[in-house]
Structure formats: C-alpha cells, structure tokens
Length: 428
Image 1 (spheres, one colour):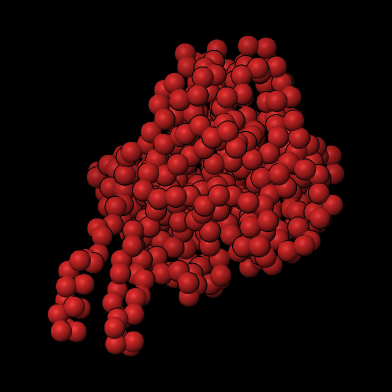
Image 2 (cartoon, one colour; image 1 turned 30 degrees about the vertical axis):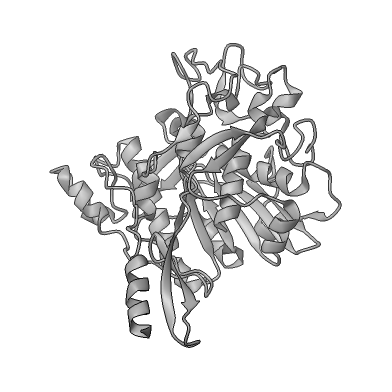
C-alpha cells in the first residue's frame, strides 16, 4: 500500500516544466573576444551558448537549480519522503492595481536621501495618481515591504547597487522605503570604508554607503554607468582620455565583492556615441584599443560587456557562497516624437492608459535574460512592468533640464523604482 501511495503521489507531483526565455537571434557577443568571428553572423549566436552553464547553489536554504524547487514532505512512515515540486513565482508577470495604502513614503519627505531632481512632489506636477499603484504578480502574492523586516532580513549584511543613474534611483528609493521617508539618527555614513568620497575638484563622490546601526545593515550605491573598468590615461590631467575596458569588470567589484551579500548590477542607457565622446572614453579589449569591427558597434560592445561582467561574477560565486547576485533588466524610456534633445516628450499623466497587464513569459530585455541564463546570477526583471508606466516619468516637470527638454528616462519618486525594490526584497 505504501508503494502504491508513493507512485500515485509521484504521478500527481510531476515536475513543472521550466519557463526560460528563448534565444533571440539578434543577441549578443560572447565575452570571449578571441572566439567572436566576423562572419558569418550565425556564429555569434553559437558563441553565446558557450557562456558558463553551471549554476551555483548559494546556501543551504535555496536550491534554485531550475524554475522549480523541491520541498520535502513526510510520508506516513515518518522516514520516507516524497518530493513535492513548487513553481517559483515569476514576479515580472502580473498587473498594476490601485492601492490607497501607497505610496510607501511621502513625496514631500525623505529629504535625507532623495535628490530634489527626482522628487516630483516638489515640482509643479499636480497629478499624483501614479503614486497609488501597486504591482500584483499573476500567480502568487508578493510579500509586503516593511523597513523593519528588510533590516532584520539583512542583519549584519551589505546590499550594493552598481550601475548607472537608474541604479542610483533604485538606491535612493530603497533608502526612502526602509526609513519610510523619515530622517533617521540610526544611519551612519560609511562611504569612506568603500572609497566613496568627493575627490579633489569633484562635485560628488562615485557613490554612497550608509549603515543602519540597529541591525548592522549597509546599503550602498557605486556609479558605474558602463559596468566595466574605466582607467584614465593620465591621472594628473583633468582633460585626460580614459580606457574603457570592455572585458574588465569595475575595479570596485574586485576590491569589495568579499564585503557584499546582495549585489544588483545594471547598465544600458549610457551606451551611445554621444556619451562616450563626452566622457572621453575609448573602447579597449585585452589591454589595447579595440580593433574588432563587430565591437565597434555600440550595441555589440554593450552586449559583450554585460555578458563578460555577468560571466565574471558567476565565476566568483563559489568563492563567496553567501553572495546573492542579480542583474537588473533595462528600465524603459518613453520618448515620443523625438529623443531627449530633439523635442521628445512623455506628456501622459494618467496611469494605466497604455495598459496594466504583463502576461508574457519571456523577459522584454532579451540581452539581460541571455546574459544570466545558465549562471548563478539571477534576473531582476523589471522591463515589461515598467513599460506600461509611461506616466511615471519626471517628464516636463524637471527642475534641472533645459527649456523644452523632457526627462522620459528617469522616474518620479515615490514611483516605479519602489516596485523594483519590492520585487528585489521578495527575491532576497
């Protein structure tokens, strides 16, 4: 009878089929530059598949070997166990709903952490319905974010955001969420421990680091818009050019990875010719100026760098078994009828006017999905759910942009990046 029960239970508990993004034929260059052929193009896809396929188990509590996880249930004999598969929540699939309990902090407050240029309550915007939306995953409940719960979960731990200005927004959002937007004497500036201070002649540091003394929890942000190493040719010349090493992760990660418990990486919007010229960045590979014609294309260079950095991070996970690593998918822009400098706008202020549901199985950022596939780095997938929130941008209300220039890239805070942090909290 016991054998029969086990067989029947097994039949009812057959493993769920994992749902992973399919390979996109337009994607990417392998991080191994020596193996990227110029022709034919179909080989580019083949090289992508050579990325590390092993997946590292971070700790004893988590065994995310696939899109399923195995719980253990006792049978009637007290020593026999039956595997019961459960599907891991796809937080990127769901809908936006109105919730009068939102926002999680005041748009008039949080002045200790929130930059005025992103606090839309302090601007001339009059419609704040966008603050009342909450993301509801389709097939599961997402844990409610509470500052005290977050600090307890990350007691004696460090969470680091490394990326561009959208990563900075996510960092400031999280600081406001933890403190509920209130000034806190429990927080200590520990930027010096991570080399984050204003350099001579500089305007601001390369990032910020704060420690909540009650739980010894550190939250930091490091600015790395390209997610690769930037090296000045002449440190004494303020007008020097810089080597942009596409195949080298930021030195900050090499130096401080051992101190980080949760890492969130992102890049994307700085990858254009204008930014590279303005920053005087010259693309380098293997310690020399790039000569590969495929990497001369900015999009290919970006994809190559993302894959390279994620692959390197995956190789470090066995050395840092407590580390949980995430790559955050790209935050969408909503410029209409032009770009930021050619009259582009995002004038809509009505929430959910272009949609509220995200039902697709695959990520809307195939570059990010491809980079993490087969690695121990997890995808923080926020692209599609942010795509339907065009009303949440700073738009024409910016207090820092030139006349006629709208910001359809960055978000009002409180706003959409708060949801990114809620999903991050749930995945942690």
